[in-house]
Length: 201
Image 1 (spheres, rainbow, N blue to C red):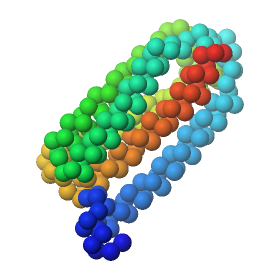
Image 2: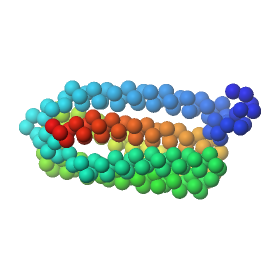
Image 3: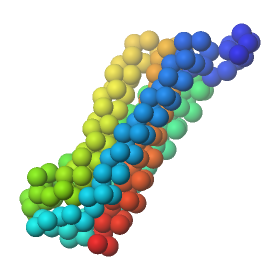
Image 4: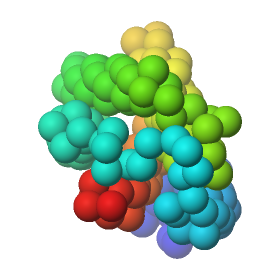
């Protein structure tokens, strides 16, 4: 890329370091795809092996799952708006929509924790059966990723408040937006292959 293209492109791409960091993160996401693919494959193999524990159709609640899905998918939309404000050079807009994204993410986590506690009280724990072990590992790994993303974003908000928009902070915000959208894509697969199928079993 020419020097002119570097200067005229999005702020996060205007340095060689920024370009390489973003490329490196795409490679990291490819490794994450492998991780989740393994978890999905394990879940598929162990599906239905509930032993004496409740079957998923008895516990999965459509209302809660739909609310969780709405919160996370909406957070992806608000994250996109945050990037739009970043591209316009509006630190206030970026921080506002990033905070809204985090609130939606926290709402998702709250419902997921409630869900796990409810299932445990109904006799479906990590140790109950092979199926529930695979379920908690898959959904829990996604939840841990969301938690890490929220913590990461909070640190970025602190940096933005102190330093404003720079090639470095904009690069970090863009990278976490990729991470957040990736988690939303993974959730769509969890919603369809775990919850929707599980509700009819």
